[in-house]
Image 1: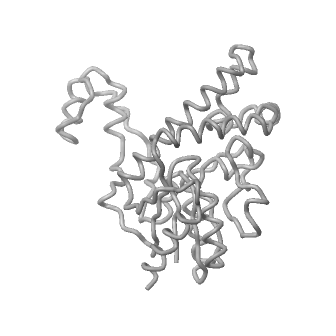
Image 2: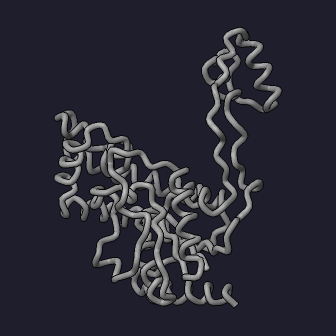
Image 3: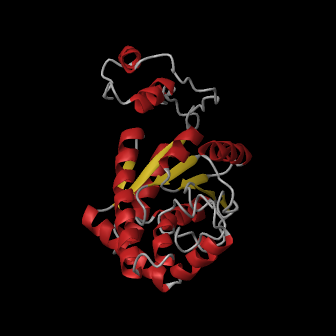
Length: 286
């Protein structure tokens, strides 16, 4: 059986996944787009060896920061592991929803094809084609660049068009919004205490052209600081702010894209949350 533990950053997914793996003698597969990279440890809140408690973890800490690991790569790697461990209890844990969607549903990637330039068409003709494609097209008739991009865009994988390919349960962990934001803020402070500045400084020096370091929250915010254009206090606040905004987007994405059974986390007595999740899983295993 496959159980997916999802939710916003900092909500407690790692701890829950390890507890479930111990209970069902399962394996854990990472579903966090930053944690796949080697050496991005503190800023990605990567699970430590101590936190793993001896549970096998996969698709984590295996990609060189100079490489660019795509959703397509994850889909392929995840499905290989699902086949390999099809007789085991599998826990997929992380907050990168698109990875999960691409891996578990019949999510297809369009073959790259040459883009049309539409050089022979006027803006008015482009707009007419756009309206033909979508009568509610919101693009301004004179925004040629956006119109061309819209006309070249393939049909998207909509939720209602996708089919779940595996027997999987989707479990979400949640908490009151202000409490989550407080957890995130404290988490960033803890990262700073653990040496985040030094980690990022080393990474920028070793991998100056790395796309992930220049795009991942917890790393990208440091570039102005290293250029003496920003104070460390402002960097910390920007990481907290970006993390909070990301958590909000995660809630929105999962609620719109997947059927999630949400559980309110009891942080004072996490065992209660574990028990509630276990009962739900056991009911669905009958």
